[in-house]
Image 1 (cartoon, rainbow, N blue to C red):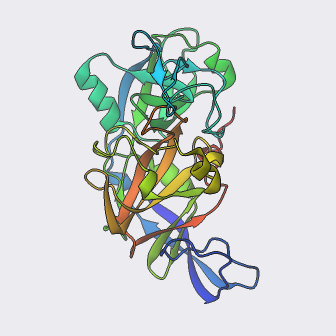
Image 2: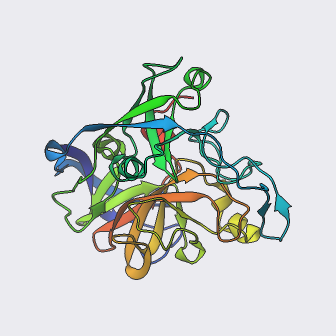
Image 3: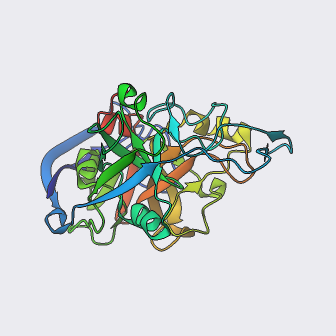
Amino acid sequence: MVIKLQYTFLLKVTLNQHQSDNFVICNLKQTSYFNIMNSTIKTNEGKLIKMSIGGYVTQPSFKNPGYIPDNDGKSVIYPGMFGVVNNVKVGDKAFGWAGDHIEPGVSIDSEKINEHFALHYLVCTGNKAIVRSGDAKGKVGIVTGEHARNLIHFDQKTLDKICIGDQVDIITHGRGLKLIDFPEIEIKKIDPNLLKAMNIKVIKGKLIIDVAIELPIRIMGSGAELNSEYVDQDLMSGDRQLMKKLKIDEMKLGDLIVINHADHRWGRSFKKDYVSIAICIHGDSVMTGHGPGIMTIMTGKKQYLGWSISRDANLKKILKIKK
């Protein structure tokens, strides 16, 4: 597979706003001038395995007595994870819902532990999903992320037909994906077609990815202890004034995001010369140490990997997802 890129040579730039210590091309004034030419970048897509794997639409689950303590010490009962969420979809806001860790669309899993892990380790965002049983049999959706379960977007008519327990098969494709020209950048759990659809540029030998928002590593919370191949990491959203100040409360489900100084190769750790790219996959939480969740898709040293800010960097637009 080859991905068409823009190689950009900066002739004159006036930055409107400095962001971190990373070279970015966001917020450039109109006085900037570029000499742009098309080029290609190689991947190992031709060597990747496509494999079908089945899961089942999950039932929403509560722990008795159902109350969740919030950041102010109050206990609340909200809809949470798993099941079929009919009215929250990729592209909608991650904040503001009367829910906790709300997952857009359909959540699937297997009760058999080895199959559960196979779903987590093989399924990639952007993979094709096919309903194999029930009233929605034959309908096609697309994987939009991984939380405690795998998350799938279906159109509204299909959502209205899907039942708890329906089998959904995913055509897994993407495990082992590599950038041949950028071996220093690790790719995680994205379909090659999603990679091809993303807005990627090369500036002075550095891969630049469009993202919707930057998250400071100091607010990253629950999930830091887990490896980045399994489950997501929440940002800590309890400081609502900080969320508003940094405009993080405007984040949307499906947004591509960047965490500066984050090394997500083997786990999730602070390293000043690393950066990680991720996707917002579930909604906000009232729980201390929790908030919207992000799933890592790229990580590497900042000399090879950078970002630019674009509000269009969302799975809904990238994958042309329709409600």
